[in-house]
Image 1 (cartoon, rainbow, N blue to C red):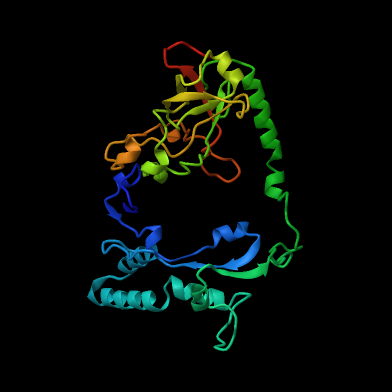
Image 2 (cartoon, rainbow, N blue to C red):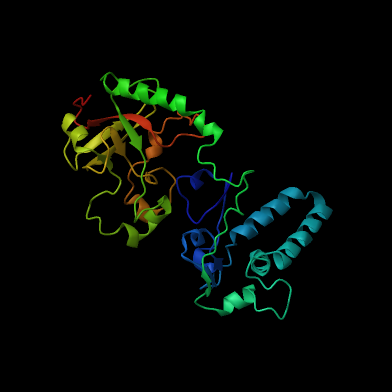
Length: 327
């Protein structure tokens, strides 16, 4: 197993080889994803602030090198691979691809040296970016449906409605009965439905190893379970109390937060915690380990429509850690 990562964390501790990438401040950046949220057409290139460490490589360099080594065998093959890799790096790196994308885009200069259109060189010179004006409508031209209409209810979703109805009815019947934790993960039997959540200062696990992002907790864990006041009252649970969250496959112990933001019957634990595994080298994160929601995620619960693992919607029982039952 090979991993590309800055850290030896919960995943990369299993790797045989860890390949260190450059950080976001050591490589140039042209944003694509967040342009989907823009209110005007813009183009901006951010150059790297620091020279990369000699022991690191850009992600694309690592992947290209791995592909080269796996695709060529023998002395001659390895030599040809090295030549092709250097050619790729020199003439078809990310900046060359970006330049071609800008040139042949709707505002581009194409290959005309006298054009005032966009090139990467022009965008680089504009330190604060280039404002290309208000957004332009691209519909229905961008739609790839045969009738140029947005399919709000594709057949695959419509045909799945009856299954969803049956599941919700089973859920309601199970909610009204207070039995032991079910062996069937698709029935609730009065238990709570566990979902995940994101947090502003710990959006993902890698942010937990930053002292600036975890400081100020004053001994309070951000890895808590949120529960509606009615559900907490039924179980005689108090704010800040540690509770056991148990599913078919395992259990974790976390502090409880009581909040009307939660829907009755639903509880929430944030993802990305659980930094107490053996072999981890995350000094800051280990001081704020928390618990991993993966430890109670049911491996038998699969999304019926797309076949992926269901990381949300796990049936759990929640009880105080003093051993008293809260069923």
